[in-house]
Length: 499
Ligand SMILES: Cc1cc2nc3c(=O)[nH]c(=O)nc-3n(C[C@H](O)[C@H](O)[C@H](O)COP(=O)(O)OP(=O)(O)OC[C@H]3O[C@@H](n4cnc5c(N)ncnc54)[C@H](O)[C@@H]3O)c2cc1C
Image 1 (tube, rainbow, N blue to C red):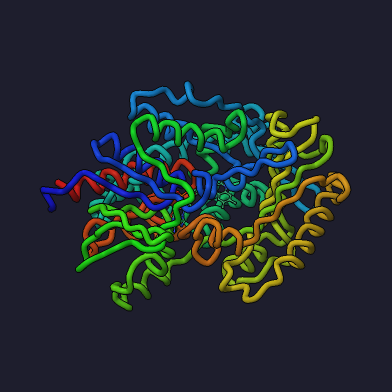
Image 2: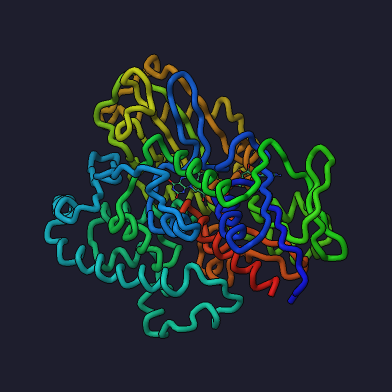
């Protein structure tokens, strides 16, 4: 394509996608500068430190460590010289309103015991699920997930049609789980991973049974000091390889002339030139708010029709003392699971029976809270902002908090309000405004069958020369490991473009 390109690139946003792209690109000989609007890097994976408590704002479940190992080893470094990972096992506990409880573990013996308790004689099917998904997982990561492909043919090249059918693309995630497990509790627990992918397990394709598999196989970890230690490690690596990082520098425009990238304009009016700009800001936000109005209405309409993952409301509670009955990760599921997903992803209303997630990282790393207190993070999935209309978030937060505390009490978990000595709330509006999340969508573009591989929002613009994307809404998708892979893919895409 363009053979005489100056090897300089600007990245808008220092989320995990932005920082990873910066590292991979700098290692390819580019001079990379990152401009971040907030005062800290990490984007959604941010940190709040207050009153002796350390809260991770977004991600709390860390898996697929091999992705991070690869990022560091590409720079000739050892990931574990930068970070200490503490194993979290049991990884997640699920609680239903009727009192049923299921804990997942990457220890096979413990897992079998748990599954047998819920579904007697499930062991052969559990082993078959693990075996089948080992193959599915390996095939996905070896051949599909990290591949820049423009067409389905390029994407599936090397994978036999027979193997593709075994992926479960013709039926739903829930249906695929149901082939192995009769218990609704096991299917609902493993199917709840679809929440992060932005769909209901009754609609998303069966290929995603690899998600719970990945967690069972690799287990969950917490970096010592919290998830933000991972951000610190990645930022440190970026600086070591020579990336320039500028914080408190909101970018107001991506500058384009005659469909060719010129650079960026900061909110101060300062213009910085670069023939390559990579936006780590959500793809839809970039098209709608950062680019000049040169995109055709037809193309913009198509981009804006992307199905997005739900929004979230998150609470950060500093709680006095220890909380009994609450392990590190717990998911509270409703009785009418199907209806809760329908309300969230289809109807667009706040579920009557609220599913929510609770993380107590101080149960694993006590240093996250002083004086033997507890750090509590609550994540409530909600519909997108445009679906909910006008909401009085102050009032809504009070009501949601009450629902969470009442539900916990039903399970014998008592958190009296007077014990909550620190509280911060991030509403879907806050998430949108602080990080540029389109329509408040917490995890970016959904992973429906038609938003995967070459059909997902691309990591480059086919009309504007020099414009690229990285992060959760583009390929391969959402979650910390995926955004690191996204960084690698975008850097590879840029290399293809330059040569
Ligand atoms: C509440 C929550 C919980 C989650 N839990 C998990 C989990 O447990 N495990 C997991 O793996 N993943 C989880 N995720 C998903 C994960 O956080 C994301 O997929 C990932 O962090 C996205 O990274 P990113 O680089 O794509 O985007 P972002 O983190 O959104 O980074 C984009 C960056 O761009 C900056 N920016 C925006 N506009 C501008 C501008 N105009 N100028 C300059 N900078 C700008 C933003 O401030 C931000 O720093 C969670 C997400 C949320 C919201």
